[in-house]
Amino acid sequence: MTTMRSPADPLRLLGLLIVLVVLAGPAQAHKPSDAYLSWRLDGSSVEQRFDIALRDLDRELALDADNDGQLSWGEVRQRWPDIVRLADQGLRVTADGQRCEIVATQPPQLDQHTDGHYAVLQRRLQCGAAVHQLEVDYRLFAASDATHRGIARIDGITPTSAVLVPAAGVQRFQAGVDGTAAGRSFVGFVAEGLHHIVIGLDHILFLVTLLMVAVWRREGTGWVPRSHARAAWGEALVLVSAFTVSHSITLALAASGVLAPPTRWVESLIAISVLVAAIDNLRPFVRGPRWLMVSVFGLVHGFGFAGPLQDLGLRQGALALPLLGFNLGVELGQLALVALLLPLATALRGARWYRLAVVRGGSAAVATLAFTWTLERSLSLHLLP
Image (cartoon, rainbow, N blue to C red; front, side, top):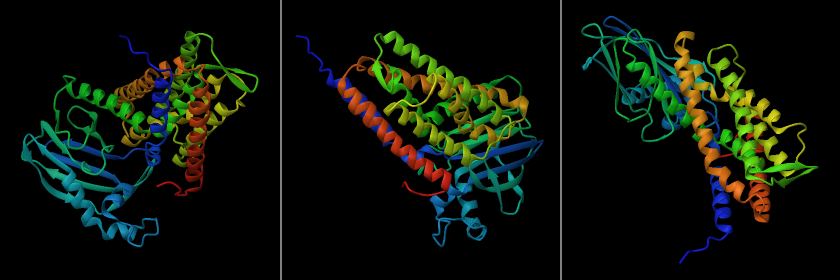
């Protein structure tokens, strides 16, 4: 006997997916947790630099002694031994299977990255012989932040870059030009691009908000369902393509250092883009084709995507492969989102409850969250936990 599936079943599923996205965690809408590592090899000598975000260190070590919400240099410097101890626990480096001796340590210092201040730990290591293989065991914040990644650059053997996942095992960087390190780097940046879109709640909500009404067309000051599913898929393809082309342009410009707008402006404009898209769902007010609006806001989102590559500081010749891999990962994440949501939205585009509960209710919730983000980011407020 065949069981009839109620039309409400896919509606509940779609509504649940959107609610989970909205409630997934406002804090994750900001730039994900990254640390930056670099090694420069010169024979048996290794110059190591390790940049860790102060916001992550404060979460882990409670550096803000007076609880005023601001970290002073005095508060950071006073806890520098604890920062060094945490870094040593989170990073183990060997060369050809042998530990190298620390022969010089730079004084404590801070540096400004695109998303804030970082503690900088610099050392010179001396190994027993010329380094042929560098082994990195990365474990920073493995127990406290599943989203954390280490973005690494290695110069002096096969120049390469890589994404380090905490507690994922030892990564080895082999001397030579056989392309192994480059291939591993490319795959790592594909995974990092996918990871970036998955935990970037503001980027996800922008796309979800667009997909909600991609199955409809404008009529006056409202929306009506598209008569054919093919038209809905065509609209979604146009919107996603416009977003992809736009953010790819600014991602490349920002990662290569050609443009570097202030992070506060970029994050505020990303929040505004989500707010505008959500309000336009509730009552269409944006003039012209919607893909044009998406293209303009896509330029802003590209700057938001660029953080890990921009802060890595790669030279032009070493940037192409990480940039291609990272962008490919972002696109795979977007396509997965389309494949998950659009079939449900297409099937339910004519349902009254889709209009009321999913589009109106979901868009109102997204607009409220995006408005809060806009206030937080533009005015440096802390309104959400």
